[in-house]
Amino acid sequence: MIHQKIDKIAIVRLSALGDIVNSSVVLQFINQNYPNAKIDWITEEVFAPLLTWHPLINNVHTINLKKIKKSKKLSEVFETISKLKNLGTYDLVIDMQGLIKSAIVTKLISKNTHGFDKNSSREGISSFFYTSTSSISYDANVIKRNCFVVSDALDFEITDKMLLTKQAVFPTGSKSNSGKIAIVIGASWKSKKYPKEKMAQLCDMLQKECIIIWGNDEEKNEAIWIEENSSYAKVAPSFSLTELVEFISSVDMLIGNDTGPTHMAWAQNIPSITLFGPTTSRMIYETPINKSIKSPSQVDINKIDKNDFSISEIKVDEVYNMAKGLLDNGI
Image (cartoon, rainbow, N blue to C red):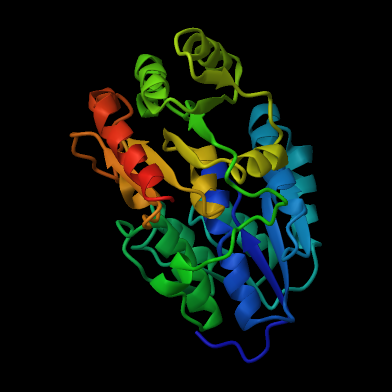
């Protein structure tokens, strides 16, 4: 679709961390094609710190749907609706999430809306809230889907070459070459987590300082266990979102589960290995330095099996050999 004049754009991507990280790559491509356009972002309150300091984002507007869901207070619902309706005038609002909740938010902001069509998202009914839509297979690579819904709405193309040569998504002062490897042990489900015993074994095989990144008390206890059972593992401090981006941007490599901090490595052009069990590598964009290993299980992306613990079947030797290959090649 073609827009003759675009001065102000709003992107709706409410959650989750990894999806926001992967979605944010579009900012640099929008800026290349619409250098004078102001870009606002609407997100869940908890993720705002990741976006507020981005130089290509004009304003970050937040909502707290979790709080509303928990409190069930109509006053908070009406307050949120009023807030969204009074954000200002946009030439276009793009829903990058494709869920009913994000579609409603998009529609409340503006009458000029764009998103995935009914066959391109998990909740197809969301398409009825848009004035225009894009069609791309739900099976397609997630990052390519993110890029397509934006570039199609704004009438330009994001090619594989552009993704392979992208700038770091989040500008930082950090540079890799620290000699450290980041290990991400957390995930949203237990079945997405590589066993701590194997992570400890991997750290010893790598024989490099492995910093174990954790996100909650349970993960911190697992990180402590790994540190106690590996000569090379060290528990990371508690990071804010911005500190986490800075740290990941400084390491030589990251190895982790399918979760937000792991996706930050690709975003920041840091070598990485992502381990998949009940999910698939469509969640990442593979490059010469960003690799993945999938467990033997078959995955139906329309009906994810959270009881698929096959990630534990991934051999430590396989992870080590891939990591060694990246390190030996000077990546």
